Length: 126
Image (cartoon, rainbow, N blue to C red; front, top):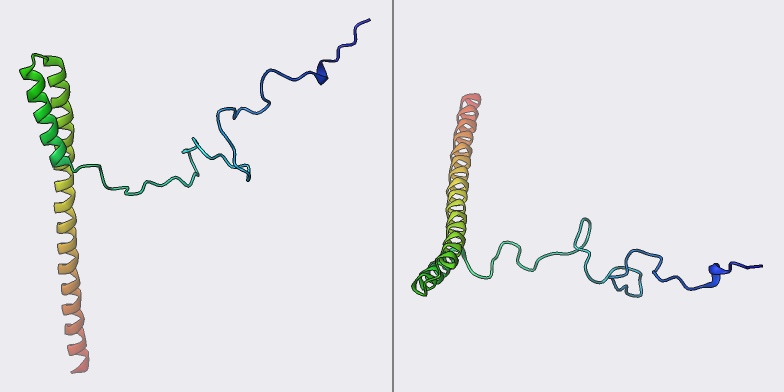
């Protein structure tokens, strides 16, 4: 008679699905989990390693060099990178001008309101 005592055998796989993660003493995941709800924050969120103007120049130079070496495909790749960063530059300039326009409009509206308040105070005091 066979007694199937597989319950005492060690299973091949770990019971939890987080085999790739090491856990610290608190039971929290120490590496990996950058998904929703994690406390991961970039050090400088709005800052690239270099600014977009420098990156445009860099990729244009690389494209020129690749073309001089006879590699048209690599040159086109670098030109596409350069175009991407030039679009980023344009969008940054547009957002700057928009924010300046909004700030100017807000300031002029504020002045108009102050002038109207002064006019109403003068008429009520007479």
